[in-house]
Image 1: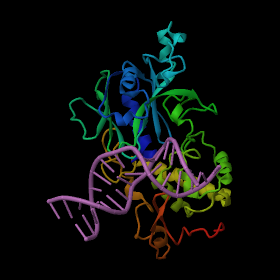
Image 2 (image 1 turned 90 degrees about the horizontal axis):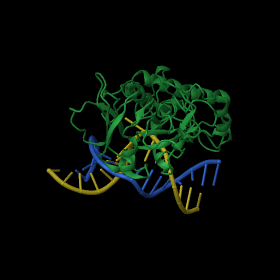
Image 3 (image 1 turned 30 degrees about the vertical axis):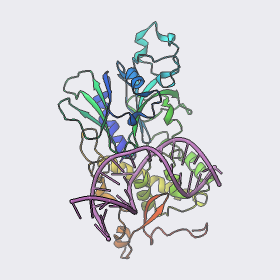
Image 4 (image 1 turned 90 degrees about the vertical axis):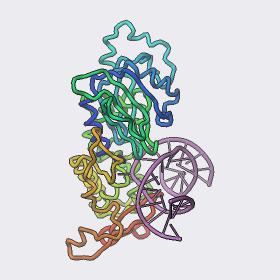
Length: 339
DNA sequence: AACGCGACCTGCGAGC
DNA sequence: TGCTCGCAGGTCGCGT
């Protein structure tokens, strides 16, 4: 169940296997996994077959593959809008399509999605939802499979738009100033070189809300989910309900740096996993769960307090219809706006 | 603008 | 054994 580090692990895995490959056939096993593709499974498959994958791009938890040589690419409409009136603009030079891309295959893993590179001989996974067959390549798996137990994730085709700030749309091997339409409302993440702390802090201060709610708001800063929000708050010794309009610059920097650190550490460990639900692109699990200090540790000692000779046990609160874990000693709850 | 809630889904473990 | 309940890492859209 992926947050930014898990999705980045998947992106890196996909890059080496998918770049330059052509999608030769598409099998939508469960149409619910492409429900965000409004025009349905046939349109989805028809527009993917024959397309070539140029790159794998990530912003926050959204992942997309810009495509070339799509059957009905140009015209600005892309396959999603279904408005393509022929795309005559570049019809005269098919080669141009190799460097120009207006369409991307979008993926969001939701809570339980996986993108697996598999050989044809590997039996179908229990929750296989979509299968892409790929052009043969030396020693490379022949299929990309989307597997998803809970079906909160999905695949769909989308248009690529110019970014609003002119920077790259996301982390990529060959960054382009283009962003997938459905990810254009998503802020840059703390690992993005174009992330601006000053902008983040200004917008954070302008909000009338609690700190964790802000950290989870993908429009303010992306990539942070429930696990890493709790871990970042613990590292920064801040409470989830701390009003954002009282945060000093140093405190905001502390929690942002903490988020960056914890996600960088998780990335190095190959992503967090509690069970086999999350696996990387080759099917191996991450090991970062062993390093969690707050998330899931209700009733256990606070390691930092213990190291200081204090006794404190972490508590779990219901917040935003989910669990939040805090140390009552080193992350005291703010009192009436003050703290 | 902010927030709370339901919807979207399956499956697991705990408790009875 | 089998039932219900609560819980799970995310996002979207609605009503207030």
